[in-house]
Length: 324
Length: 223
Image (cartoon, rainbow over all chains, first blue to last red):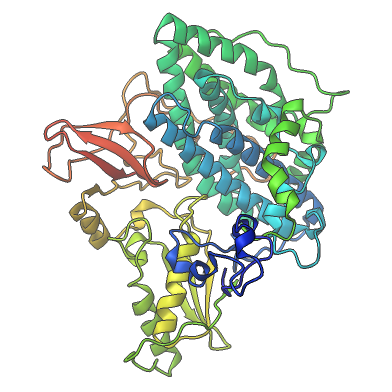
């Protein structure tokens, strides 16, 4: 914390124990917090868009830009949380680290996109008590309900085995890379910059997943059975990625966003290329229905998202004035 | 914008900062250039290419621009704190650090001195990225030259429906074969090395092993 003061609701306070109360030193760790340089990483918040010009371009509706950034940010946030669940559980240390790296890249993208949404239209940010130090991107991540999340359902599905995670990263990164390549030309300079950086990261994610898909498909009978089963389970969610929501259509029309329907051909071609090399047939899969046609982009999710949010949000919500 | 709290005092014996704007900017640049990366302390932020700009604002404040290496780079706050602390030690109380997102950081910005420092520390420096239209690591640099079953997708239809489509863009090629890089073992200089993983202990590194001396080592991967 920059001022070295002891936060009322810090995690340290919560665990300081009864002995720490009623003295001048109500936090045993207070002395450690005086100088941030003692820590490997800063203990205080940093605006990820500090000093960045976040002016909304002429002719762009701020609420459209914000809603569009929430969609892309939520995709990354929820996928990152799912992939993070592999920490310490992957088949070997290298893959554990690889998955953690991919999750970290996506978390970084989410943070920038949620911050960009908040800067474009502050009304999207959940209100907290006036003295809450929680920054906008964290309010968006931890204080919205499932119906307010705009991620595609593919990102939120519960994890299966390693083959399932590889297949899901493959599908998501093929799609997201195709979107981000085009978003580098967004009229919104912030979104264009986030996309340009994301393209580099997603290129590594897609190659990683593509190589593992090929390896598993051409590996043992068991690895092939698992990865093809994962593809069969996940393909019903593929079509949702290319459905054009009104927000995406409006964002594309004003030159800040990309109509996902426009990347379907390219994404299909990349997927078919991986499947061909892997000797796997594309499963016939009817798109998974939504609720009267409404799906993740409309805020209508599977039960799995509610459970994920309950786990990730409960501590933040219990301490709306918390500093972390 | 992050404004430092003036809690740290000037280093004893530090020179009084120059008064002219140009001289101050140069002085600040020289000081900021000595701050090291928290994860790769053999590199200064300048040698890493993360230090993007130094200027003196109209109100006299020092404004330093830094850029993240990766979107999720967890070291940004530490870099900022270190820059602020170093400048305060040299007598600059009003220091602001801003984030520069554009253009996106590339390993091509690591200076020759930085590359030498990496190699000296046993970390294989990145190859050149250069040339990729989107700035992606799929061009003619470190990731090029992969063989079958790799394939480079032909340029897709340049869709015209969205205003955000980049004209003349060609898709980032998919690479399914082994990554080909001209990597040499930083310990024994052998070129007989194998990739262990494209992801390593930090976002910016891949893991390799030398087949000649068996030493495992990090490679700063091209982006």
